[in-house]
Image (cartoon, rainbow, N blue to C red; front, top):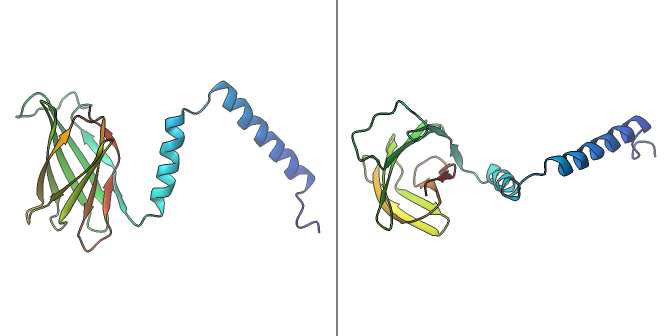
Amino acid sequence: MTGDMPREEETGDMDLDAALRALIGRVDPMPPAVGRYAVAAFAFHDSGEDFADLEWDSLTDDGALTRGPDDTRMLVFGAAGSGGVQVHLGVTRVAGGFEVDGLVEPAGHTEAVLLHDGGTVRRPIDGEGRFDADLPLVRSVRLRLRGAVSPPIVTAWVAVG
């Protein structure tokens, strides 16, 4: 029966662990949004999708030079999946929302699904890997690519509004 019961030193470690968790919970509690993101990230882990992390954001690059309008934000995600897929997004604020121009490299995916806090927009991806979409005025957006030989690719949520 001793195999089922923790040893005395293990019990002390568990008590210390519980006490530390309780102290941290009182001193620096986790914001509810972080808990939701953690649960979503854990659920994503088993979803069969490849994750394309944000690699570059013109909003945070002081030296970024763009030839487009000042209100266009450029984002680069990737490299994801076995093919090293990269996604380039241009997000332009317009009256009533956003215009999104995307490029998937290498080409091969057939559908871009833009998830946002108000719903979903589905757009076809052409043979060169390009797509565009109009979004309402939203706070954040996430992209899911479908239709390739590889598993679907999904990006992180990005605050845009």
